[in-house]
Amino acid sequence: MTWEIGDIEALFDDDDLLIEALRERGVEAEAVVWSRPDVEWGAFDGAVVRSTWDYVDRPGRFVDVMTSIDRSPCTLLNPLDAVRWNLDKRYLGELERLGVPIVPVLRGTPADADALVAAVAAAGWTELVVKPSVGVGGSGVERTDAAGLADVLRARQPDVELMVQPFADAILDEGELSFVVLGGRPSHVLRKRPATGDFRAHGIYGGSVERMDAAADDLAQIEAMLARLPFDPLYARFDVVRVGGRLAVLELELVEPLLYLDRVPGAAGRLADATIARLGGG
Image 1 (cartoon, helix red, strand yellow):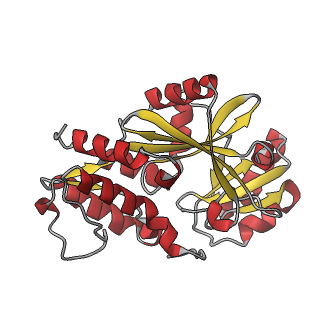
Image 2 (cartoon, rainbow, N blue to C red):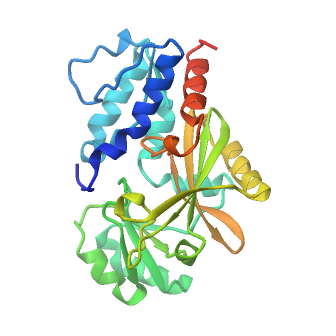
């Protein structure tokens, strides 16, 4: 993969829990590497896209494999249209058009550095985050200020599409909130805070992750966002931060998110039940 963490096996804990929950319900399940060339996808009733962390290295190949699954008798979950849509973070613009609040974003390549710097100045943003449009796990994410933006952009590969966003101060105090949706309903919420001296609210970079109880109004906001999606996902994770007292989407994960099933008793079972129901077994 294009990024490294200390405990790679931890990325697959959710998968193990889901497989166990499915087996407890009498469903045969196994982990299959998406890039294996010898897989006969039609031999399976369903394929749940889970910890496909390395798709960023071969996004075209990944889409080809997902398309082949979709064209086979095997049911792809999440569905192909949702997978394609979610691979590139340009979906944030579509969310905004659908009426979902997002953290503002500008897009471009290093060749657009002058235009992006001017747009940031016009917006009045002072602290910024730069990230690739296709990426996972905080890979390639960099924090800078407006004065340093041009240098950060020009240090990137010239043809890589990037996103520039204002840094959300709430990440450092309240934290980033992850609302996990299973089977079309909010299941549980995690509060993620960065490690001291860092800004990435990822447990894999030493940040803290804790389960929390969500306020009724926050849950209502997430349900409203969910209702505006152009898909009905088996699972989703809304990564949000509070801006002006309301929740705004940093990222919406429909492909490879950590769902933190180990943090909540019964969560793996709920996902297993929802999977079986989508496959017509419940």
